Image (cartoon, rainbow, N blue to C red):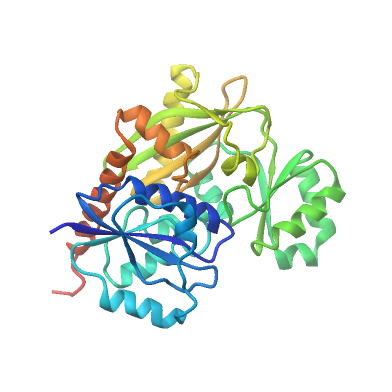
Length: 357
């Protein structure tokens, strides 16, 4: 009997459309001779579609046309978990950002004892929270850009002192980010106090915590990590680009992006990046996969920018490219490997004892 793979995508997230693009690639690249492949769409309101089996390639337009209006949120979730899943099933979550990459979906799957691909609850939730993850990485002496963070209440109650702290600790130019968000959504580069106020208010549209970081002048270099207990780093990669900051459209809409794999780096610098990436992976308790994003200065100083527990799988995404170039394997073989890791992690969790005696 074939294993069933449910590709879970969409969701209540500003990265909804990116999730659809990632899911479309995954669905089309999964080996239909090896798996029964189902799409499982969650709309922007959180309503789940009924699973739809995919037996041949599907277009992004077709994925967007699934109708969820007939179902209530509670009923659609109940129908799925009670009536569809069997012991040969695994979920492949590809919900980027909130309600998917932040541990919420993973927690629900854990409660139902369902195998899934990728990182668990704690690794997902901590990595998604840029402020919390930075504090944890600092405890491991992983170099990062200087930063400060405020809650919405803190900032609105003490605006002048918050701005003074930013000017003293960070300076200009600086970057303002929502603490829990990805794909460069809600991020702005600020040169003045006036721009800073506008950027912070925009960031609060996406999260109640805001992060302000110093600007690091350098190249953005990425590494993919795969594995559970035994982990491995890919080659380093970077995008050939003429701009210093990638916004949402640059990351996902620019067909002219050119990946450079391997990135041209001294071997010592690359090995140090791998060491920091593996340390971050182990510290967070990651499993399955991670993409670690670094800044490298002209003097080869290394700064960890952020980590992504569900990296992009779009046609322009670096994570699958890094794996393919590093391991000399296909996109389909990458998916097979991640599914294998998911089943293995689930088996290990089920070997634990939850009853005393």
